[in-house]
Amino acid sequence: MAAIPDSTKASLAQRLSAHAREHWPRIEKIITRYRAGFAYVDAIVDGEQIRLCRLRYAGYANQWGFAIYRASHDDYDNAFLPTGYMSGTAEEALDTAAWLYLDPGRTSRDDH
Image (tube, rainbow, N blue to C red; front, side):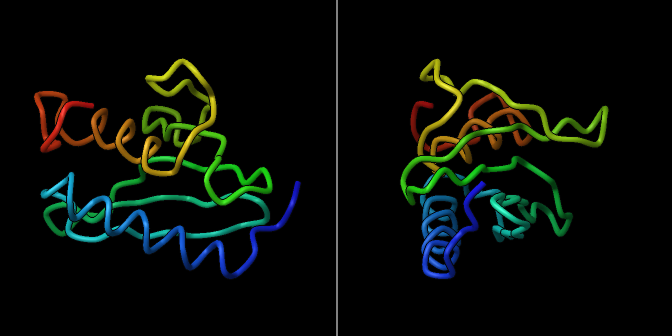
């Protein structure tokens, strides 16, 4: 598994934060952590840190494998995005995880 370049780490954090500000008003802050070829995405909501998903780097800054955080098992499980694929953009992964964890009754400002 390829290591995530520092430039990709920086752009990923910026992109996810900008996307959250625009589409997920309940998210106060996005936190990204990195280990090997994975980026772990958490959100601060109402002052509480919530784990959302894990992104797997495949060598491209715009294509990431997706795994949803399972609170019931305290782990990450590879999952499909609404597109039907197990990989996509980091923004698609954030939207999917935020929709599941924050408010399935339409937290996002647009249709996801």
